[in-house]
Amino acid sequence: MTTASQAKPADAIPASWVEHMPAPVRPYLQLMRLDRPIGTWLLFWPCVFGLVLGAAADERRFLDWRDFYYVILFAVGAVVMRGAGCTFNDIIDRDIDAQVARTRGRPIPSGAVTTKQAAALLVALCLIGLAILLQLNWFAVGLGAASLLLVAGYPFMKRITWWPQAWLGLTFNWGALLGFAAQTGRLDIGVGTLYLGLIFWTLGYDTIYAHQDKDDDALIGVKSTARLFGANSRAWILRFYVVAFTLILAAGFIEHAGWPFAFVMLAAGWHLLGQVRKLDINNPENCLQLFRSNREAGALVALAFLAASWFG
Image 1 (cartoon, rainbow, N blue to C red):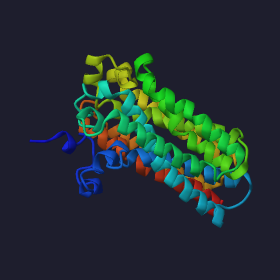
Image 2 (tube, one colour):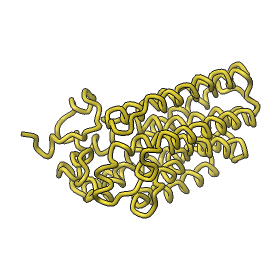
Image 3 (tube, one colour):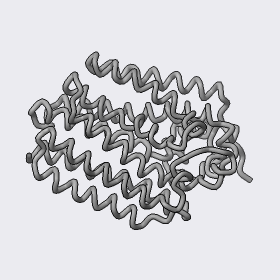
Image 4 (cartoon, rainbow, N blue to C red):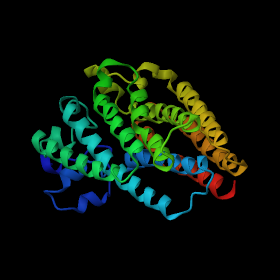
């Protein structure tokens, strides 16, 4: 028999290192989604894109010690702030999560963590995130603080709009703006184009993700682009990915990326096209696998930007 403290979300990685941690700590690590690192990768990659694009905007290569320091800061920040966002989301969504098969094993609805304990973790994570943010220039600090408005609004979007995936795109890709600002102390049209392209990327991959829950969502009245598009989702996801690819490519060329950038971007575009070809919206395991493959899609885009910096 599975107890509340042993309950495990259905979409967690089967052999995660979290499973081997002491039992009292394990629910808090699950609350931070450390047993499901894909979200951290999807939060981290836009930061890398922004950092490299910012170096290009300053007409220098992405190679010096400051760049690597920023990568470390943003990597830690992605883990911490993804954990904070998930904790906040789970506090707000605890009643909904209890009604969805995939999420009822999460720490709060399963009873492994109380709401007060989750709130204490949220405060601690936010303080760590603030300490990281204060390592950046003041323009970036203000920009980072502004993202909290998006984070705070996200859990409520599925209740009021069919497009919560668009709000997630605004939120999850803020790191591109932040990384660029950390490098340059400003924003420009190049990073704005990148940010818009990444929003469309998120619209694609999170629509795939939302198809796992569409039946439960319909029963409890939760909205999503997966429910909105239904059987036409494949065509919409393809459109989102085409727009994302085009805008990301344009962002690189705005900041004077060379042909090595475009060459590697073709590999990223092929990867996204492969997701659409393989998609089976009625197979939750297929949707989860394709959603997770966006870690590799992000790695290819990062490699494209690095190619532009090193060989452009």
